[in-house]
Image (tube, rainbow over the protein chains, first blue to last red):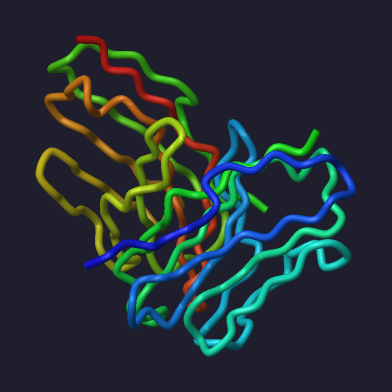
Amino acid sequence: EAGVAQSPRYKIIEKRQSVAFWCNPISGHATLYWYQQILGQGPKLLIQFQNNGVVDDSQLPKDRFSAERLKGVDSTLKIQPAKLEDSAVYLCASSSNRDRPLGYTFGSGTRLTVV
Amino acid sequence: SQQGEEDPQALSIQEGENATMNCSYKTSINNLQWYRQNSGRGLVHLILIRSNEREKHSGRLRVTLDTSKKSSSLLITASRAADTASYFCATGVNTGKLIFGQGTTLQVKP
């Protein structure tokens, strides 16, 4: 089974620029998550999709972050404009059934550096 | 917001010794999961224990859960240098959302 694919692996941008990350979950996984992991901390949930609907985006800074999951498969996370404090690893994860969790499968993440 | 608090923050042991990490949480949970993260890599799911379970084993891993104390522990027996990584507990709620702790950094010296 192929894993969760994320791209790019690394990105360096200047503050106030925009950036987008892409995630392709495991085939058939209905639930997709984006997490932000700041260095030295545990991951923090930004947004959770069930198919192409949003389940939880309570911690997504909506003034600058947006995410979509078209057709309930791939997802993109965008930051516009970026701030220095957005420097982090952005992790995408998917799971097959949120009602009977068997654990998430995480992608390798995108490491964002804002300078 | 972070729910789990992990203890210790860092742990250094010799190969062959056992490593124990503890996790405490604040709210009711559906399940508790442990993940490993190697430096610069994604998280790998290790084990899941449901709220009605007290202990679970997987290979060299043993997880306990005490819902009355809102705490869990992860024991890695006969540690190896390859076990060097950060370990995170994460509490699962009914929506499928996971809330992660701050993690324990484990160093296993050969």
